[in-house]
Amino acid sequence: MAMNGSGYALRRSALLSFASAMMMLIVIAPTSTLASTPSAFVQNAIYSNKITIFSKSYCPYCARAKHIFSELHEQPYVVELDLRDDGFQIQEVLLDLVGRRTVPQIFVNGKHIGGSDDLRAAVQSGKMQSLLSSS
Image 1 (cartoon, rainbow, N blue to C red):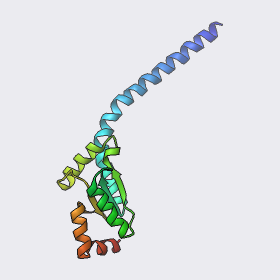
Image 2 (cartoon, one colour):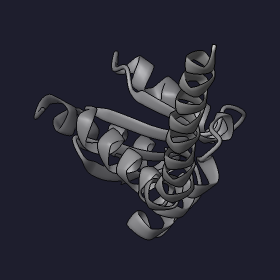
Image 3 (cartoon, rainbow, N blue to C red):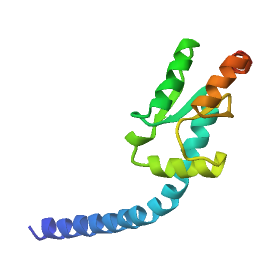
Image 4 (cartoon, one colour):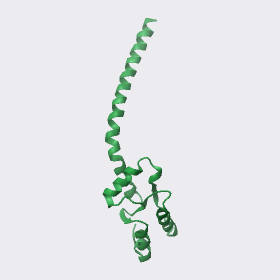
């Protein structure tokens, strides 16, 4: 019986040590990863997709941009900022990156196009079709 008691004490001690180590990781990791996560996410979204739209689900200008791409038979990667916990931080990254935090912000082949009006102008001039076909 004493052996079971000391075995329990050893397991409890090891578990407490493990829990303490995990608590240190939990306290340390978020401060280092949270700061870079929105920026890394934005860069990955822009450069890993042919078309990326940073949008808000209720925004009529964003809906217009999505509609323009559907008319071009293109399927953009859409990031709905209002549906993400880090949407505000992503908008701050966009402000640093392109000087705007408004939506939509549209990227095609890694190139910043601008907003809905910019997209419409690029389509009307033929620049968007040229950019899309060059990928």
